[in-house]
Every structure is written in C-alpha cells, then in structure tokens.
Length: 395
Image (spheres, rainbow, N blue to C red):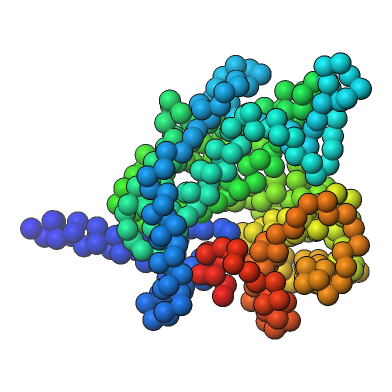
C-alpha cells in the first residue's frame, strides 16, 4: 500500500511538473506565450482573436494536404521521397535552341516552377501545422492536435510519404545543376515545425515515439545542412540566405539538444550582423535586388526570429551595436519612412510589397525598445491582412 502511494505521488509530481513548464518554443518568447494564454481568460479582445484562430484551424481539418509523393515530375535521382523544386528566378535562354542553360531574371518567377508541387505542398503543410498547433495550445481542443500530428507524420515520420532529410534537389537550375545551395531557402519556415512540436507535447496524442522520430529526422537534416556540399556552401551566403540558414541551424540544434552547435553559430552571427547592416541601417546586399524593399524586410524577419531564439541562450541581438553603430534597431529604423511612405523608396521594387510583414516587426520593436514611434508607424500601415497570431501576441 505504501509502495503504491509512493509511486502515485511520484507520478503526480512528474505530471504536474511537465504541464507547469513553459512550452519549448524559439520563435516567440515562451513567457509571452504563457502570459497571453492566461490573459485570454480576462481579456475579451485576446479571447476573440483566439476564437478567430480556432475558426481558421477548423477550416483546415477536412483538407487533404499533399506530400512529396504527389509531384508529377520525379527529381533527378528518381526517388520521389527527395524534395524537389525548380529555381524561382531562372528562365529559358532565348539565344539557345533548347533554352539551356537557363538564365537568371531576379525577382521574376518562372511559371514552370508550378510544374513541381513540393515547395507549395511543403509551405501549405507548415502553415497548417503552425495554425493548428497554436489553436490547440490556446484552446486545448485535441482535434487540432490530431490534424497537426497527422501532417507531421505524413512529412516526417511515415515511411510511405515522408520527405528525406535533405535538399539535394532544391531549386534546380535547368541545364546548370540538379539542385543548388540557394535552394535551402525553401525550408526557411522549418523552425515553425520545431515550435509546433513544443506546443503539441502537452497533447494526450503526442507520444514518445513521435518525439523520438521528429528528433531523428531533424538530427539527420541538421547533419546534412552542416556537412553536405550545398549546405556548407549556403552557410557562407552573405545575404538573407545566410541569415535564414543560421536561423535553421540554431533552432534545429536547440530542438535536438545540440546546444554547442547553436551557441557557436550565434557567436558568429555578431559578425554577420555587422557585415549585413551599414551604420545608417542600410542592408546593401538586399538593396541590390530588384525587390529591394521586400528583401530588406525579409532579412529583418529572419533576424527578429534569430534574435528571439538567441535570447533563450542569454544572447541579446536586439540591443547589440557595433562600435560604428551597426545594429538591428538601425536596420528597422532605416526602413520605417519608406514603408510608411513618408519618403519615396530609392531602390528597385518591381513587384508588390506586403506592409503586413513589416507591421509585425514594428510591434516587436515597440516591445523591445519601449518606444512609441514604432507603434505610431505600425498604425500607419495596419491593414486587414494582419495575421491572427501577430494580433494575439503583439497587439
């Protein structure tokens, strides 16, 4: 009897300890996540946004999502489990009879890309898992966890449909290669899956086998990123590709318990920030692009997530500044008058610009720097495209 009581108390202790812990997330501060969930009980506006998120998740429940097995064209190696995509900005060369090798037109997407569905299906899966996992976390409704776990199984765990943990054939440039280093940007949203697992661990349907399987996949992918020819080459990219590469390495390494790998990468990122941002806040490598405003914002999105992940290791990029004034804050400040249209953009922007992407950055900056100028700027550009999670966490 005493022995049974002892084991009951021990089990109760561990049960309570597990659910008292903050979720293991890296892209949003875990304490903020916990506080928002608790605040929703007394905050009508937050509660309404969570209901909106739940409605979005409900729409995802009946959808059948595609996998790497659904593409109509096999990758060069012939293995359908290999992720495959075509280079976004490469087009047939009109000077060549067969158009090969393809030539680059920056900022102009070749519609041929849509012939291969892996990138679209991958993005759709991540978006769905992100929405469903957060809906589960805030509502505790298992139906959202069920669907999210189903998608994780399809892409990472089930032998019939899973994606092999590499990007050997991502963004293939026709007539040039069978996949190149720049294709690693295709998985720039993969850290959202890492956070989703952290949210799903409190579900009754999340198993030890799921956890082991996900860590096995991500460990293999981390190994590929760090040792493959394309992975090592992409690690030297100076622009947003390099920032997103580092973000993937850091979050995946932390997820897999490889803290030394993450810490070493974060230490090197002080040099990356100094290289990418001028003392006046310009990002020259992004300003070279034909979508200069979009890519300047895109790179700062990567930095905002990287800085949040770094904070879990006690590293502060938000307030870091070089001796000559280069900083993340300066980079944000430089773009503000152009995004709010108080000044005319001085560089190329051949396509539409989504102000909603910068809106999130402004709300985070307002929180980090305790300066109302960011809130004032945010109000100037707020529109109906604001994502629900942004409203839940930052408004």
